[in-house]
Length: 439
Image 1 (cartoon, rainbow, N blue to C red):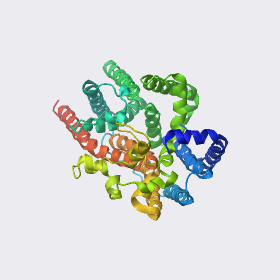
Image 2: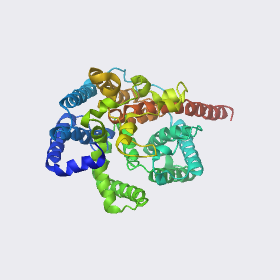
Image 3: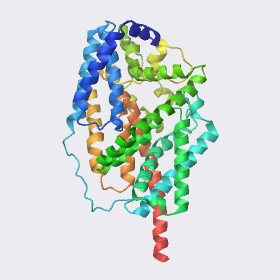
Image 4: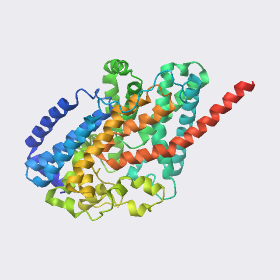
């Protein structure tokens, strides 16, 4: 079933879809109301996408377009994922560190050094990618921006991590009001903010500006100050949400304008974007097309394809067959790299079988539970370096339900970026320490 067929069925059975969506929204609210802190919480967006994706499957089943066999598998795997998610909520696997510990980057000066290193790397790499490849906003597919096999993709890894890490360090700087104590630092901080906003606007991602909100939430959540953030949010939420909506409209209008689109079309596409969270299911479930997938490689090989490709264990050509791209192009001709997200239900079924998919989903839910509930506890009082990288994984953890391979790509990015940044930090910090000793 392609997009047009689904929209035809959707328009003919709109009342069924609306009823399903409302019912599932109530169910999700009852399940997660005590663990999600509102719109600023990164996992709120994940649950919104999950609600829409689940609605697609239930809708297709009620309209008799998918088999009971696949519907039961979806329900079992989704339930297993949720059980895994709640499993570690009240368990303390890692000993919470004490405030008296002295980790890396724990003093105001070393925190400032870390911000200057990460932000300057972010700025330099961002300008270099623009110089070499142009503006990603004007690309037909953002996935092609860092392709080419020339090693240019390393900048994608650094920018992905440094955007979050430098912003986390900047928020810590603002919290200590260090940025206001010298004109040169204040000027540099303003320049960094301008570059950050410009890069998010020009990224071509409709949800790019949400990263600011997510990093802010992570910073306060990691430091046990979530009530402070909620107070600020209640005061400024109207302005923040209005600004985000305008920026999103700007991005999709620019992108739509390349194909003759207009603002009304862009608004419609924004609504369609939420519903298409479940597009992989209307591509693969009807007529049991899911069982025609020809690339039955090892499931763990596919899950860790980014790491295996980066280490050259396999060539990128051997790893490029992704379920989302395959099922999309089964219905829609495209010469560029694009496709649907292979949600954990489908991914598990393809690579681990009917029963194995349920176990796979539970394990992913368990991993989300660890990242959501355990990682912030362990990162508290750990200075600035470890929490900033942990915040990146905390935010990227929301992708485990929608696209499992994306989280492991993010984990690989952390491994690639962390050690170079740490080495540079230690060199700079030791230089100033020696300088102060012999001054």
